[in-house]
Image (tube, rainbow, N blue to C red; front, side, top):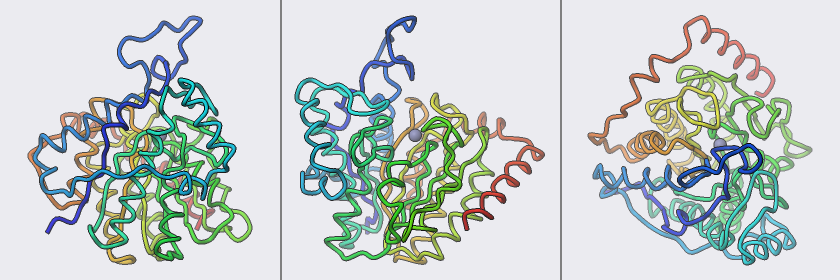
Length: 368
Ligand code: ZN
């Protein structure tokens, strides 16, 4: 029986994220780019879906779409004045309603679609229609604050899905694991004063938001202890990430015993991403997926949803995504990661790794 679902929508590939040459706003000395011109282009996502199809893996998955998130769904997380402003600017052809988050015409409706994919994935997993699910959400959501767009994100996709699921299924404990290379500051902002959602973010320290690592942000008031930030030093690779998973993430999840686990699945910690400086490859994402899936099986009957976040190498994200889908579904394909050998050779030396583990041990002592 097929147990893994894949949610996508062509609309999500039609969102325009503004004109940047990779990460630099065009203007002054920055020459306008050729091609799509923004790091947050649809290509990495579209090619990921295409590879899942071309490899034959899609035929083993439940392939589905979703209705957009409604205003009522959004209002559980975002105030009306923010939604009104976002909609107004979107209707006027696009602009900016926050830091590093330009958008084009119609992006409000596309963002609603993106959040809808995550909501539907959560609903179907909660109802037991499928065991686990991947939502290819674009635009992403994990930087979006309740009243402000940020970092390519316009709606808080995962919090919107969690609030809906709490209302519909009475969930008391949900865990969010964010392995996007940038800090999941939006998710933290929504849930930091609450104990009913455990937020864990693995990220490159001081990367985005700039200058921020968050190791001492452990939650506020009732939420104290339910917000875990694990900043990793630039250059961390496969072994450092797995070490952080084994020594911090897995124990925290096992202790919290969530009824549902959602992964903010960015692929920008890979070794060729233009927006970060980490060294993961497809087998790293495969291994992390296997680990979180195993925890889900032990604590919440396998209920696991992955929501797409960042990842800006158009050529390489598909191979990391393919590995995640193979691990989620237990279906292997003939797809070979063409960069696996190269990135494996670029991993830190044993000496450097020992230092990185020491840093992670230090973080663990502060956060667990
Ligand atoms: Zn990111």
